[in-house]
Image 1 (cartoon, rainbow, N blue to C red):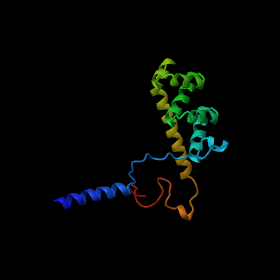
Image 2 (cartoon, one colour; image 1 turned 180 degrees about the horizontal axis):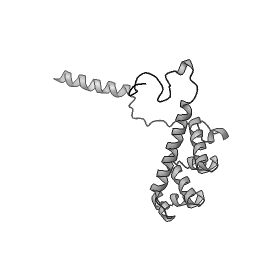
Image 3 (cartoon, rainbow, N blue to C red; image 1 turned 120 degrees about the horizontal axis):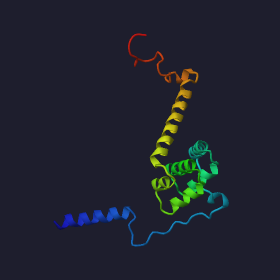
Image 4 (cartoon, helix red, strand yellow; image 1 turned 90 degrees about the vertical axis):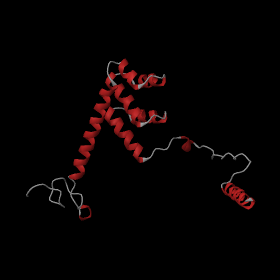
Length: 165
């Protein structure tokens, strides 16, 4: 019985040692010194496209969208802020100041006499319409031998049709 306990304790000690468990506090990682370039947030291509789309959709400069991203706002929040500013006719800075003060998006919209749901539905409809237009644009591209599997809907292809042709 004593051998089993000693084996168990030895096994636990071995596991803890392998995981790096020690009595010493972890050493803090040192970050490289920030240069002027590394101080700026990095923006990947997908984020640039999203910023450009929102800026175009709400007729604002991309820098406005970037400013909101720098404030750690998510895409949905940015959409709410831009939509409320557009519908209310108020400056974006006024809308974000209200949000920063602790008001919710619904409260801000109500302050200006409309419901948040109205602008959310409109924004989603605009987004869906844009996606449909993009899909139609993609389907009408000429087919090359490499993408013959991308046939437009309704073309004579691999089954899926109904009735006689």
